[in-house]
Length: 387
Ligand SMILES: Cc1cc2nc3c(=O)[nH]c(=O)nc-3n(C[C@H](O)[C@H](O)[C@H](O)COP(=O)(O)OP(=O)(O)OC[C@H]3O[C@@H](n4cnc5c(N)ncnc54)[C@H](O)[C@@H]3O)c2cc1C
Image 1 (spheres, rainbow, N blue to C red):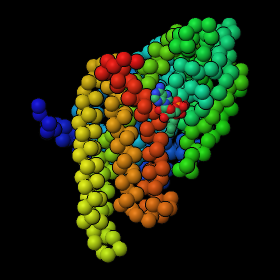
Image 2: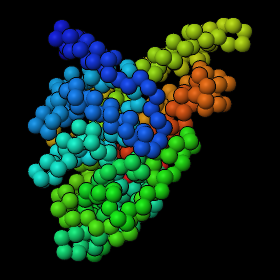
Image 3: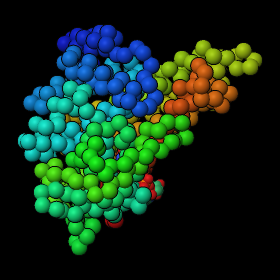
Image 4: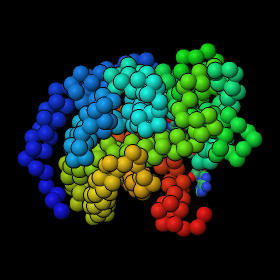
């Protein structure tokens, strides 16, 4: 096995690093609303103009179609810039777009894919409902079929960036008379349609990144159904396999630089007696453990990306990666609180970002499917244990 990069790959890394250094936005990202949307889309437009949009997307859909190694180099360099791995572009680029590539009609692909990469539109995901999260197939938002339209009434919850989205990957029930997995439809919903009502939810980190969405007889053309009416469960499984299998690659890579930053801080900062924090054996041991854990995560990420190469869709092993990354992320963000000490009591100030990230990290083991659900998938689909 050759783990070193080739000279061409090193040159490619230099090219990526230089481009990112020259183009990554330097002004602060607005925390909410239209200004935040404009900021994220301007960054997407810059990547499109520079030829760096959709590094993992095939070239026939406007992506870069990079090889496995080059994708990883891009993700590593992107992570080094410190840019947020999740912003309003996340759903479009990471799982709605890939689902359309894998499952949509040519007409649907033509209508949507290039607009995602060009930074024209924001997508959101309308899967979860108050009574249907882990048990997604219990969803109740209902669509009546009226001629060539679906008429949707119901509610979704935890819809990230719904308040600034143009389009939504929406799951609705179209048949109540069949087993629950068999009466669901995956449809593209225009978020500007009459009858869509978005109500933002404030989280403990103070932001309103997600929302409840209510649908009151919202009319959606049948032509927006991806796959078949009542056949949406298998399309939803494609979406979730992208969400769990590949969407968090930048996060995984970024965690390594977070640990290195913490180690550096522990060397530079001192305790009340003036000793470097790193001299505390317990903290040093925890940091060393974190460094070993992210090295294991990195190896798993390489393996995951490599396995997915040449497959139409990521396999269930993505759940191992999602589980390991999210649990580790929470531990490392907690460790950061030990390094910053009493500054962890405030969300503002020099160390405010560490506190924000700590509060945000609680969502890592819930979003995209809770840890218990990932463990169930690993048990049943990878280890073959009984249900
Ligand atoms: C930051 C964030 C962003 C999100 N963005 C979106 C979005 O954009 N669109 C969207 O549709 N959804 C989104 N979600 C919702 C997310 O998908 C759900 O929160 C998640 O699937 C869990 O569902 P739930 O909240 O209903 O919890 P529940 O399903 O009610 O689970 C509650 C607890 O019970 C456990 N549990 C449930 N069933 C089992 C079981 N069978 N075995 C063992 N334990 C079980 C769970 O693991 C969890 O600990 C987001 C969530 C977060 C945190």
